[in-house]
Length: 576
Image (tube, rainbow, N blue to C red; front, top):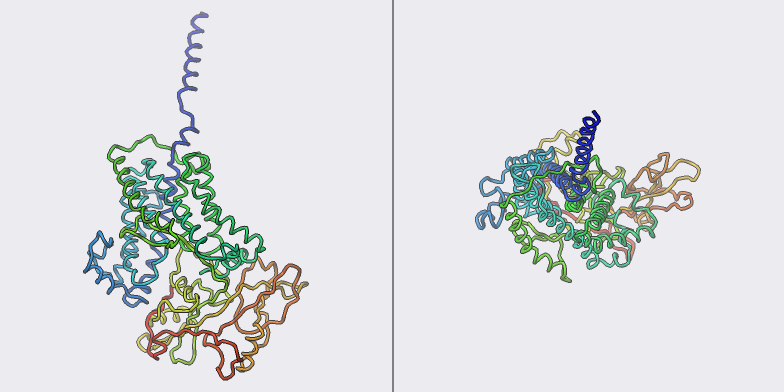
């Protein structure tokens, strides 16, 4: 009986030992797997492309359509006559660039991007998105609406994602070659941005760029106010952090050591999230995070986000495809590397028609003042109305908005007019879209066939305001004009009386605000540590009569469209 009882005991012990020894260590499996990184890259790319295609569907008709600011049809037809698909990849070789087809291309890309977002991680879906976006970017080459660096960055990222996925198996594991190509992209983006800063503007050497950047960026966010009023010592240290992350930490993404690579990936992601919070840069920051995710193996992710690793392996044909891809990217990277080491570095440039390997960079120089362009329209040439765009700080009584990753293209393009010398990047405003704008926002019942518009350009110098009306009472947001501007308004017969434009309880940091032009507020009794904000106002219609102008003072620049100067009717305003 004892022998009978011992036998199952030994067998049970043997089974128990085998059960303990058989499974592999989960940590080792997680360190060798990048299933979570692949899933995150594909899903995030789908979200970014869906937003980008939606903004194209909303805005393209008004920007590059038949009645848009810069119609693309004539340019596309000319390119089709002189090239081929391999020199200009797009769908316009088979369809006409009409408004309906522009919308159809954007909606096709949007549909495939949404499928990618919900988990259909297939190569052919990413390829369709790439072709749709390439078609839109190429059609808009005659204008500057799609000339931003993130347009080519989106194309390059989507191209690599085609090879990250499989055409038949959405759970197929990524290959190491494709992951290293994503890290190569992350390295070039970061180093290119750092080098263009060092070579582009002296304020990066003086460490003063961030003193002005948050105020002068194209479309400030609600948090830009908070960043702008940080102590200058902290902002100067922020310049050091910027250059350290972009010029030095970016090299770590190429180090073949797991822990070092993880630290580099975390640093790049945290840096981009900080920039995304401080302003509206379309999809730039969201898109730059994607290649950095390739530095994180499954163990580097929180357990709640990890994807189950798969044991499937790519076949020989797939491995050969990756080798060919590596050789192509290496060959196309030659001019990009030469550009990085050159003293005459250029940013946001492509060297091949498919835009597969590009140069990147942003804010090589930062302006010290915000000269906000203002567009005014009139139906009789006498009474002018400012065009209020969705996120452009024209109406300074409106708080800055959060719009990224959505891209308000016209708001961004108008910002470039503020650079000295102030020159408009486009001159004509569409009568049709202006009618739609005023009907939506002002309820004007005007016939589009009878309304003749004039356009006028001007700039307004804006500065963030931060002032308290009374040390004992609630906070207030005030504005004032400098003495010289107030004196000119008195001579011109304009009112100069002071007024407080907004009064709200609570901390001013919780209620970011941009000052309202015109008028002057009495000098407030500032509390300790508070700053008195001022506003320099350049009137939309220009300065006062030259005969009344004070000697030795320049008249503010006024920009008028060519059609307005000739007294003609003006076509096209995007209202996006």
